[in-house]
Length: 351
Image 1 (cartoon, rainbow, N blue to C red):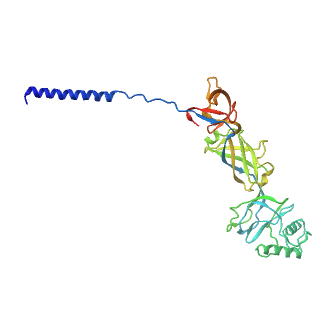
Image 2: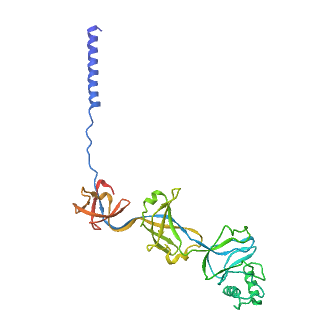
Image 3: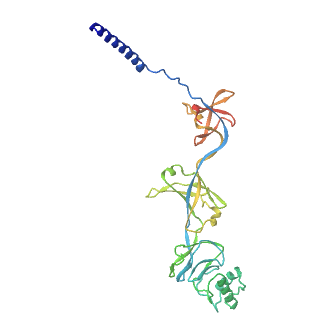
């Protein structure tokens, strides 16, 4: 190939490369066409009549002052564990060395052993207990053969050994029965030893204290005056939260009272367990319940003057309407200004 021809061929190749580079540059550098921007369609929601609120469940600590009901006067190994609760005449609270400790209704605490030849009101109280539990004995106030037979029968029917006397410490005498009693479960655990002198049986106070124990985040949702419901058995007590206090560990305690300021349990405190402390559950109305027309919060628009508006759509025609927000929770709001069954617009398709 001659030199002029080689140069001509090279020039042609360079021209083709340049043209291809030009078009490649246009394809690379030219911005893409703008995508069509379509606003998302708005959703239409039907207004419904509902009750709106927010309730959380929290534990309630119930504490009761304990007044000693009897001091243990028996010594030996515990053979029957103690059990708290409501007791009647003749109930066994616990047993030491197979000697049962029994509830009796009377005026004076047991101050002596009872047996042959004993007379007095304490013997009469004991005889009334035997009669109340099915024994055939007359209440004479004198320990006689019939009383001894009834006592032995009472013991053997309950798998206790027969005895001629009622030892000092076997009777817990209360002015009225039935009554709620708290028995120290730890001290009266089977196999444990008692020496005498222990305060084991107590009567709970008449006005238990109720409190919710929460952390800081929970406390922020429960200002003073918050309505609380405390269910217990067949009861459902209404309560009000008081001012909170915090301890050194950061645990916050919120006291509860009845709406009138009294004990939460009112006249039904006897239905509570007799122990010094009890745990219950409560329903706390962190958002008080409100009933009315409910719309999604996303349907509301706040105006510069602070007013709230919604767009009501009727037969495809929108209408701006001012509403009053009465309460909100979980993305919903109760409002005045619209009626149940009407349709409102929720912007951007948000429910």
